[in-house]
Structure formats: C-alpha cells, structure tokens
Length: 184
Image (cartoon, rainbow, N blue to C red; front, side):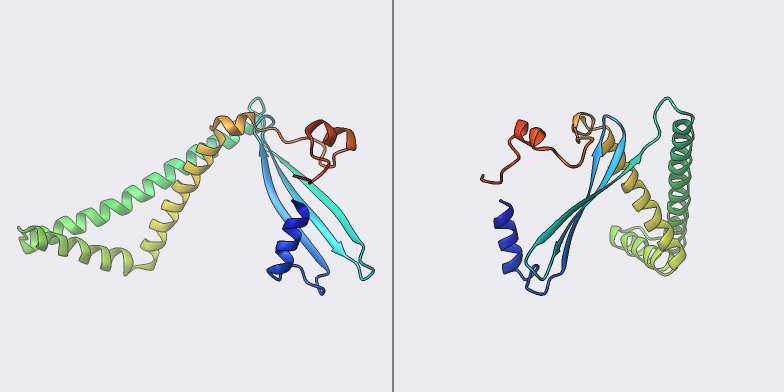
C-alpha cells in the first residue's frame, strides 16, 4: 500500500526528482488519557537515492478530571458558553426590535410586505454594520466549535480509541498486529 501511495504521489506531481523532503502531519486524540498527539512523519530524499525516515511525536495532555485545572477549564468553558449565548441573544433582540418597529411604522399587513421589512432590517442592520456581522459570525462559529468539541469528546469511539504510547514500533509489536509488511 505504501509503494502504491508513493507511486500515486509521483504521478500527481507531489513527489518528483527535485523533491528533497516530504512531511506528513496529523493529530490523534486518545480519550483514555485525554491527550492529543501531534505526529510528523518526515521523509528526506538524498541525492544518492537513500530515503531517511523520521517520526516526531509531541503530546498535549488535557487536565485530568481530578485536578484543580479541570475545574478552571470547566468554569472557563461555562463562561464562554454564557457569554456567547448572551451576545447572540442581544444581537438577535436588536434585529427583532428593529423588524417589529418597521412593521408597526409601515403598518405592513401582508406577508410580502413583512418579509421585505425583515430582509431590509437584516441587510441594513446586520450586513451593513461590520461589527454586528462580525459579532454574529463569531458567536455562530464559537457555538459550532463547542458543539463539535463536545460531540467528539462524548462519543463512545473517542473514549475507547487506543493510540499506542510508543510511536516507533519494534518488530515484535508490529508482528502482533500484522503491520510489519504492506503486502495487502
């Protein structure tokens, strides 16, 4: 599989005769110990045709539930959630009041007239003011990020996912799992 992947990279122009180095980076999460692993696999192509391989692994450990830092992190997460929801609620309240005022002032009774006023308020109040637009976008992206984070952390897969503690496997370790050869 590795040779096929390298051949595919060569056909697509990723690896050529002028390529000096190829780095593959990825991040893995181990839910058992609440740690992120940043892994960089580096291939260096020498002029003699020899390929040097190197693996770099950095660990970022999240605070343990039993530690004092967990309470601080949980408190800050709650503060961010409350602040974001309150800012979005205030911004939506302002848009709602402006829409309601426009409908009352113009005495719009038909659906089309009300829809026009709503679109007009959104265009001038939200899209016309870059700070309000930025506030909306910031709040929405914060909520999306928090939802994605909690849905990822609370999944059964992340709780049972195992990432080996030793990044470089010995021949005995890879033989147990059948990973010493890429013949498949």
